[in-house]
Amino acid sequence: MSIQEILRTIASGFTQFSFFYVIDILLAAILIYKLIVLTKDTRAFQVLKGVAVIFVATVFCGLFDLTIINWLLNSVLVSGLLIIVVLFQPELRRALERIGRGTVIDKSRSSLGESAEGIINEIHRAVLSLSKRKVGALIVIEQKTGLEDIVATGTRIDGIISEQLLENIFEPKTPLHDGAAILRDGTIVAASCFLPLFDDATVAKELGTRHRAGLGVSSISDSVTIIVSEETGVISIAQEGKLIRYIDSTSLNNVLKSIYVTESTGGVLGWLRRRRNKNARK
Image (cartoon, rainbow, N blue to C red):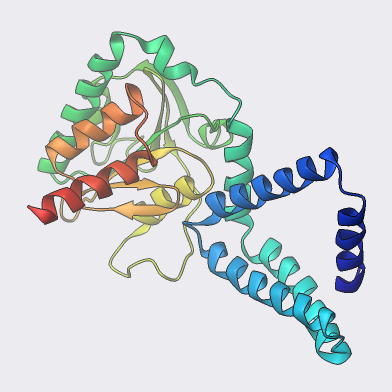
């Protein structure tokens, strides 16, 4: 359908204005708003803004009957939408998963109850100990998006989360130290799991395979990944394809609370950014 036909359809709609057209407009507005919200923190958002500019320009060309320019812009518009689908598959997949998760009840927090505090303490102590000893670790905390396909790549454990078990898993030269541990609710489901690597060119060159793996799994799910560098002992957090480094003890404890006890607005990274901005203003 050309832009002229779209404009004629809209114009005919106004001539037959009714309650259903109001509903139609409202639904369209809500969909556009949701699209903006879902993509605003992704690379795809910049491309979508470009497509929106081209769409507006195409509408004006249609109004003034600029045939050649209108044809060119129509072609670019269609190609641009296809390019977005091809180039930004991870972002689109994550957005669709967020839509799907919107109706899903978060079972983990309600089912853990009082044991959540114990789980937080065990993970917190283990990560700080690994960091102090400069033992590399990759801990993926599953949330609403299931990670069973990644669990299948490792060794099944199904053990209760404890400081000792986590430290033993990542102890150098042990069978399970190479790979990621997957945590689900109060259980270490599996260890030595393979994660997809993040191949974005913007990732800092000093970050190694462990950090790229943490970013990789966070880009295809809503999981939160805790990464301990074996070179420096620095603790990092990865979520939604983004990484925040140099996590201290207090921040780590609050991150774990935001996962297991209270859902923070803007996610774990949103909480960390707000905390750092607050400290910077002091």
